[in-house]
Length: 62
Image: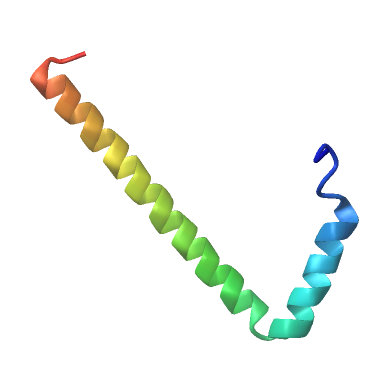
């Protein structure tokens, strides 16, 4: 049913709608902000994983 749900033209329509709603001046700032947020999320997830592995190794539990 959802095999071909996202076609390339869907992305094109989404891009046009974003340009119309936000304007071309705000899009680079929004993309930059999204990139920063993704970088922070990735670093926090990595820190949590390394913290969990350190606590498991320290207690000796499998």
